[in-house]
Image (cartoon, rainbow, N blue to C red; front, side, top):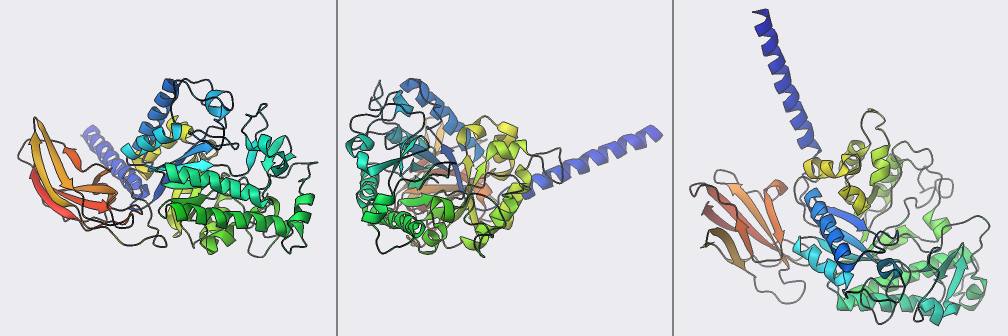
Length: 505
């Protein structure tokens, strides 16, 4: 009798523990229908060097498939690491990070940027082309192609700590970068143009920026060289934004700055940190760009851990949430550092849970970008598993950008289900629309059980985000009733009203 009581007690405890675990998982999962979930795919680390076309395509396909399972909805793909190209360009040479030798085309020939656009769009992901605007040569590059800008215009670059930097103070150099970007935006169906944290070079001991002559020639009324450098970068950011939106207003312009704007020791509005500063050391006045609306989204790189002595993660995410809310704010996350550092309250787990809890507490944080994609695919510290099972369990649409466009398209037309061979397929037709800001670009398909209330705010009911005008439906027994709802999205992810279709599967 006593053994029976103990057995039942064990069963009850197990059930309660299971319920508690489920509740915890559900409470941690994102219930936001709109969230930027990005991942950086870099080339400058040389991960693709030596790969054949087939090997690189297979590697990228696998990464995209795994990232899709993790819930990622945007890929930020590096296409210009050192004034070169991972795409067909008549302006700059092919990158050595693609073919091992700068200026040499891939063989068999392919265009990685165009290929990635198609692959991402087929998976319902956005593709943001990532360039470095000023770095002209990395430390490990020895030979430059004859058509490289540093060869054609050596007077436009300066040397610094083994690098070559395109001089931000030369107007023609700024015009050149904008021409490169305009060429990309014109010829490729990208969703965003992304630049990283490299403006003026990171300070290195014993190194001096060689731009005194440029300052003398292009002073523009400035007496202080630091103020002049900041203005050079800000003028470029504004010019680049106009270049992008003049060509295609819907292409989002994003910047991923270093994680510290200013330390409190330098300015009253700075963060309580002690590290390299965007404003003072890199000459990047990020808040000016955000507050003036020159960029469409901002992704500060908060790569440190919670509790870091010089740059505490909690301090920084709170600071950015408070100071950079005039444009969508996404947080750059370092997967490896998050996975290797223990939670301050529970040393048996890493800091992923604590960081995503902070995300949920910040009303102005609209998303996350993972540094970097391969670390998520390799599932370091179960990061990828936790994304797909907990934090990004359900799909998410892109955050709205009403400052670009806030009018939704018309709803889809002629929604119906047809049986084709042994498949049941939901079809619809595109609604009428005029212009990029009125036409349907993607569609969202929701599914509800017959007795459920239709609630399009619930992301757990999204079964597909697609550019196709059809969707194969899962068959059950031919007797179960479901309610499907199809909506249209425009280029800026404004969503139409839904069209309801009741089916038996």
